[in-house]
Image (cartoon, rainbow, N blue to C red; front, side, top):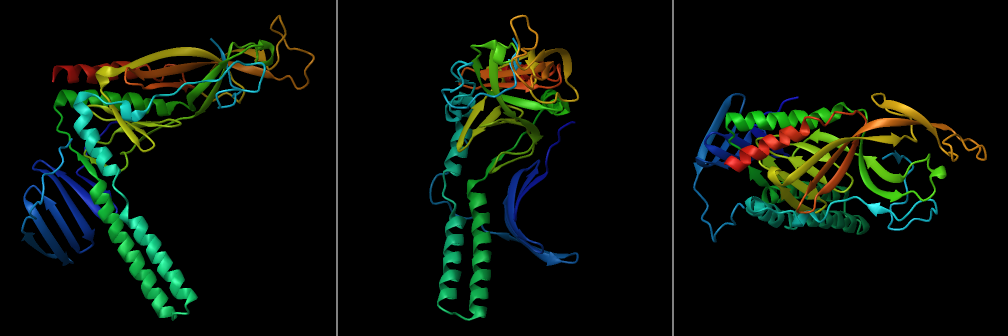
Amino acid sequence: MGFYFRKSVRFGLLRVNFSKSGVGLSAGIRGLRVGTGPRGNYIRAGAHGFYYQATLPPVRQRGASRPVAPTRPANDPPTGPETLDPTVGTFEAIESGDASRMVDSSSEALLEEIRNKHSRVDVWRGIAALSGFGVVAEFFNNFPSWALGVTAVLGIGVTALAFRWDVQRKLTIVHYDLNPRAIEAFGQLVDAVTRLQQCNRLWHLRGQSAVLDRKYHAGAATSVSRAAAAVGTRLPPYLAANVDPVTIALTKLTLYFFPDRILVYQGSHVGAITYGALECHVAETRFVEDEAPPGDADVVGRTWRYVNAKGGPDRRFKNNRELPICRYGELILRSGSGLYEILQLSKPGAAADLGPALKGLADIASQS
């Protein structure tokens, strides 16, 4: 799967247009649009092949603008800091630090713009609440049906306009003009990340505990907690770009891989990591699978849910079923600014190309 450049990005009634001249922004409905771009402000109206367009005078700015700124069993322990299971030790979370602290000097302006715009209050929510209150008040005061309908329609219309306005106020636009070498390097990264989708299962490791009594945990030394992870292609909220980033969605945060950096979204916090600051380690691990093994898993052995001292089944336990030992891939991503995430891949070797792809982009950034 390759990547491509967008010519326009839609956000409801709002559209961001990319061209060689620059970036433009327009809003409206079929037959009527108002926009602004490198060549000025305009209004366009028409239908059935006949259109009228007029240039609008520029709006005077009242102030300066902001700068753009060993074997693991599959039985999950409790996710809290302590566990009531006497057979395992204290649960140690595997998670990144605060995303807002993940800042490098080249990303300060961009992150400042994103954070400032994200902090703006959504006006449409207040209008929607007032509109709903008005309809309810009219209903209990026995207003006629036509009045209720008019209030509801007006409320929906004003709410839609306010939503469009909120999107425009909170939208950050990023435009890339890549040279052939950067296009090739980013394409290799997109292919490497997308290749993770070929795995039947992709897990995010949330934490682990040392096993104190191995006979209760299939003879394993460590017990881990894991959750499903997902790979995709989508833009972050309130951000428009002419490049589609690949994403890795984890339990608490999402990584967006752009040509020049990785944006880290953790709830309302946003951070950034350059490729030169990212460490990528690919390895293999043997995992005692408590579930049915995925179709692409490499089953390398068998064990028992409860084992005796010799590694055989402990006959004292009923329903002591046999468990497969699978060879899985493991991907570790970390940075000095606080990123620390571990992914487990059902298909060994699926992440083999990710490290070289990341290094290729890091080399280009160091030479620019």
